[in-house]
Amino acid sequence: MSRAKERRTVRERDHTGTDTSLTKALTPTQMKRLEKALRRMGEEEEKIMTIKTEIGSDIAQLTRICFRFFAPVYDRHMEKTGHYRALREALDAFIIKRQIAGSLLDVSCGTGEALLHVSDFLNSLKIDVTANDFTPEMLDIAKLKLAGFLRNVTFTSSDIRTLPSEVQYETVLCSYSMHDMPSPKDGPIQRMVAAVKLGGRLVSIEEWPCAVTNSEHLTTAVQSLLRLSETPIERTMLRALYEKYGLEHVEDGSFKIDDNHFLYGTVYGKKG
Image (cartoon, rainbow, N blue to C red; front, side):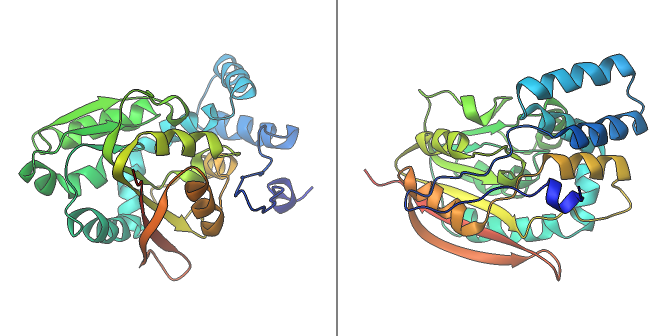
C-alpha cells in the first residue's frame, strides 16, 4: 500500500458539519514506521513497546510523543520556514488590532511564541493569560521563554478534550493545532467553544494545505513521526464545526507562509 493511500481518510460532508474522518488508529504499516523512527532516535525496545501501548489505547498520545522530540528544534524550524513570520502577522491582525480584553486562553501555546509576540500588549491591559499545552517538553520551553516578559500568566498541561468545563475566557486562541488533533475533531472543538464566555471570541490560526516543511533543523525521523500524527482538516470543514457548536464567523484573513501554503486566521464570536 502506498503512503498516500495509507494516510487517506474517509471524509464526508453533511449539513451538520460533523467531522467523519476515520483516523482513530494506526495501521500495522504505520506502526512499523513508528518503530523505525523511534529506533533512529535512540529509543530502547522496552520504551518503544510502552509508546506503542499508549498510542494503541489513545491515538492522541502520538502527538505528545512527536512533539517531545520536535520541541528542542521547534523554534528554529518554525522561524526558518516562515511559519512564525505568518503567525506574528495573524496575531497583529486578530489579537492586537482587535484590542481584546479580559482573560485569554492559549489552548496550544507550544513554546510560547504567540504569547511572547503579544506580551507587551497583554501586559498593558493586564490581561490574565492561561498558557496550555498537551506536551510537557513544549510547555517547559514556554515557561522559560515567557519568564520576565508575560506577567499575569498561568501554565497548564491539559488535553484539549478535557479542558475544565467550569472555567471560561473572553478570548480563546488556537494556533497550529487542529491538524495535530486526532479525528474526529468534534470533541476538542466542543471543549474550546465551551471555554469561550458569552460575548467572547475564539481566534483560530491554522495552515492550509498542511505540510511538514523541510529544514536543516528537522531530522528525517522527526519528520516521519509528524507525518504519522497529522490528520489535516479542510478550512471549510473546520469552520462548519465551529459554527455547529455555537460560534459565529466574524472575520478572516490569510498570511503567506511560503509559495505552497498559507496561514488562515479566523475570528469567531459567541453571542449571548
